[in-house]
Length: 288
Image (tube, rainbow, N blue to C red):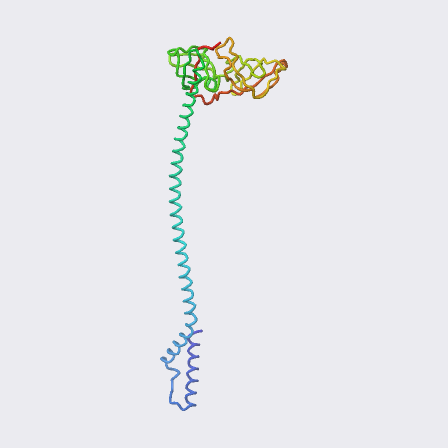
């Protein structure tokens, strides 16, 4: 509604009021053209019109206040959650570091226990031999034949000679092939150059064990018809060689027929873990 329209409406109302006053003989006259009266009436109508809008304004203000309060509460809650997450993350990181540290210590302790048990078994094994024996630590591998030869920390100064057998508490390891003053090279049973007479105990079948590098060693020249079974023990023959008789070599893991058809080829799973040698014992001579 425009101001002119409103003004005209106010004048009509004022005229009506004057007419009514005239009818009732009341001496009350208001000039419709009076600016002051128009302003008063205008203010009156503005107040009447502003009433509903003021309620709406208050309602909107209350809604915004409520929304602001909820946003503030959500912000505080999110901030507290973020702080808790940061603290938890730091604590988890600290615990992970402690766990890693304890895991390393535990691994070292287990290795020490394993080495101690291995040395104890070697000492017990040493008492079963009447010949000269030397306990040695494995100090490395030969660069030219990394997976099939090892280096031990004893040599000529400890009366070690080429050809001596090398064993540990689990079984046969290999044979000394080269000696210096304070070290020696041992050729493992996995080396194709290493050959050893063996016997399959239960079947009482003899043959020659030969290394095949990264595959299981095989026993050749076992005649067809021998009653050999998977899992049977394979031990040193011990006749005319450096290895003591009946010393464990491994177990039959596979049986196949050779190409000539006259003999079997028997794969052997070694009793010794070639990849984890830490200490061994050198045997000066076999016991007959």
